[in-house]
Image (cartoon, rainbow, N blue to C red):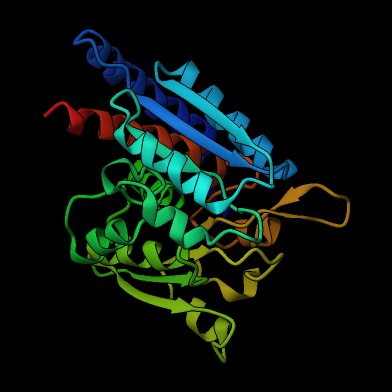
Length: 283
């Protein structure tokens, strides 16, 4: 068996085309979906992520504002800026790029964002909405994973899904999204005594721990679907995921590559959330 590749770049193009069409419909009503991206400090990776997010907005009919601040910005000043953006009718989504400088409480800043503009899906109100099945914004990376499963027509009902990782950004919301689709979900983490015993039972595996080769071919049952959320570097300095791609490809039915898998979907779902925030604001 050779796994079929779930192409995140191709799926992103399809979804972004839909975003552009819906954004055009809003603009015809005099409303341009707007995203404010706030960057504090000069973290090189954050600068790349922010640049990609702003470009994606501009390429797909959304309005974006990038606000850059020195790392010495006070927490009080950042909170004041977020409060002002909450009140700005031209801004439908607010994203504060993480990580923040050490003197800031990231959760406090996230909680300052209006839930109606929390397009990252990190606010406690968004987490509560996901937990209870109410309307809200889903975190972009696991939301993208769900779209990838949907793209291959995968029915999660009654399937056993194993999520490796328990972060608030990916692992926990991923498990809840899978549960909403009637999967039986197991969350594994650093204190799981026998990871292989868990993954060998899985019909779907989502690897999201940021550790190379945490999932190898001998840990995957034939025909499983494997989604690789990891972003690491191999010994040659090339981008790779959490999964031994070459080995697992020989066992799984479907797999996402790194790069070109989940990564492009994360930014795409940010656009979708921003668009939906604008649509909700018009109702």
